[in-house]
Length: 376
Image 1 (tube, rainbow, N blue to C red):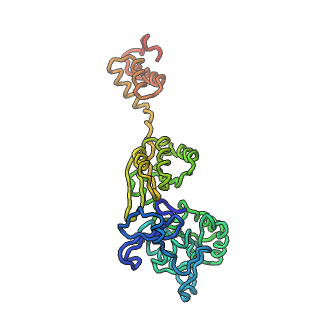
Image 2: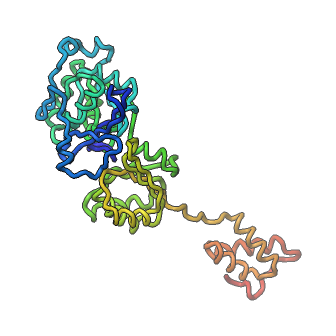
Image 3: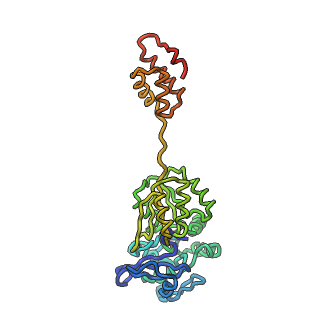
């Protein structure tokens, strides 16, 4: 599982970065096979039409084992150390839609690594093919992780340099790669970040909601009861929430969010950095009405505003100031206390005691309490 918007998608290639004329987008069909969209091509093409445009993986890619045979033996013979890359595990962010977002350091790491550990050899193979990079691919995903992890750790312990990537974005963010990172750290193997694109952070950066405190909750459970329990736990969190969701389940998530979180601001991002990027600023109710009717496709990042701040209880100084106004207007202590308590929600008994102290402080003679002021 990779990041929102692009789980199972690789980067869009630009003419400068890939050598192709114009910009093309690489995506993934439901079975994970890579296909290319030309700019302006409608997204609503049928599954059969998309299948006819499937691109085969680069030569040498094996869909079963994930290993890819080098087509340039001379280059393959040299180790990562000879190419200037120290041993260890490199967590390399890949584009979430635009190949131009791939940094020079990421490209150099992919070029120099002994192997690239990926979710899908077809997706990553297409990315490397467009970059002109030839490296072995090892498929590490939910199905193969337990079997492959000991093998990867052995290679790392022997001094290999491995690059860990997801289909798109930053590995280990809603991605099984975090277990490999943890195992490498436990084994004393160096783990280095090669940062870059990340769909949740990209959405948060353009949402216009507070970013001083945010909580990334990823994909919530698909079952309605479990999803509602998660939302109930998130409801009081005083932070901007970042969620991921797929198109078919988006309306159900919004319906539960409307019932549990209330009418908050929500920014919904789709196709970030791609040709058809869409960022909508709505309330949860507005989003529910839109996507109930639309039946959207794709994957989404939702940035949800924090709950409104509860009104803080008034300070003693604020209560005293309000009581001063009431007493100056000629009201009795009990009447002043009753009015201030009603207006602020403060305890009437506490306000009454403050009013008595205030009345005694300003009395010209011995403080006294009238019969009407005997109790609050």
